[in-house]
Length: 420
View 1 (cartoon, rainbow, N blue to C red):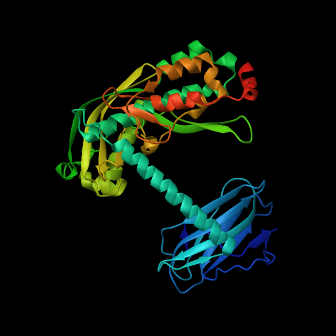
View 2 (cartoon, rainbow, N blue to C red; view 1 turned 60 degrees about the vertical axis):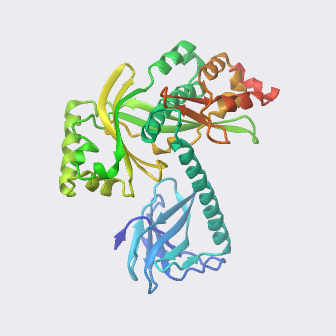
């Protein structure tokens, strides 16, 4: 039996420890190559799902959908894999109580597909269309983020690296501002907010070395991720706040928050992580940069940038070496920062429309912050964006976008929120 993500067909209900086949659905199920078995414990609070390959072909992936109590819907997709005839996969989904499980689709290794019904097929086709649109958007973002400023006497790789760290620093400010919508005003004064902004994470990058990946691929793997550097001492978490003014209008504010990891700052914890990193490398037979990359970030990497990071956060500082690898003219990156989990999705626009297009822009604090955090001449996308200047190591709202946002009218009916 194989364990992993699973999907299924048909339902078996276990109540009071007695297996019973679920009532036949009036809907015709066209999947014949896999059998779904679902078991509930006695009080129906835990669900175990099995999918068995009953075809004579290898199944590459399986998709199952879950309907949870309260109406929420979840999806599980297994693969890529090689579920041979007679083999099964098992999953125990977590969360609220599950009221219905369906096997939506199986894809065979030869490329043929079986889908539960026409409605599911249409839904999956639409999801595929939307996924392709999103992929196209992400590629556009990556290309714009990798675009170089020819006026700067700076390698493309260095420009990209500087924009990543600058954008994380900027979006940590958005995390502070988001607290204004979450905390009670009496707990978060203007002075307190300014102190939090001042104490946010900042980066000073220096001693850059760039070149072809071939130059470093045979060097020791510790060049890529030095065990002696601070290990995971800064935690970076993403978050968002959705503020709605009506059924027709809402704003999603996204941010990244950086904080010291108290456990990892302890000397014994740090040494433990260093030792474990070295043990894992020895166990995997990793001796060179190329070996490590093959395991951690497989791909056709062509360029690299190595540099020193000096990071400050809430008055404390650390320094260490880090490295980025690049492919596809800088559009694809692999980040090796031992101290910080640097999100690769920072190349997205992440424009805080809530601060400039809603009634909140009339608050004096936000008005001042927006005025102080605009940049001109760095806009790359048609849509509103946070753009970055690698020469200064700063990011901000594209001034062209801010001008447009501030020209949008505010509905008088929304001004009631300012009274709070």
